Length: 201
Image (cartoon, rainbow, N blue to C red):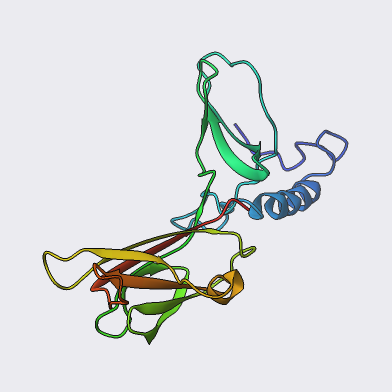
């Protein structure tokens, strides 16, 4: 076979070659580059997804031997769903997401062991701590779970959100204050204090 530079002809489809093809290739790169690592430089991550846009929908029924991944509104939020090949639907994202969490040592001041979306913990006084969020909560009506462990065996410990004169003095979008008590009901520093914040909004 001999190379023929006149094939395809300018009059042939797709239009003018190669100028038109190069222009279309550039457009294709622009379109795909928003969501994918475009296969242009033979890099190790060529062809990988950078970002996937999913159109909100609520499919019904099933496609034979086909699973589907999609997003749709549930309880006022957009969530990720999967439908298997028999039409069973599974919600993959949590309906009550964790907004912040921290495990800290309250006996040695307020040393954070592990945290998520917590910028710092301040020891206000004996047994009383303020958890400062890195990113604020959407509102002040979030849910707080507090657990604690005292640094002495055989004693009971209780924990709660700070008992204050008003709701807003202890619970704000930027922080929450929590208390730890010993079995006599007195404020007590906790060897381990765990605080988890949930929000449905």
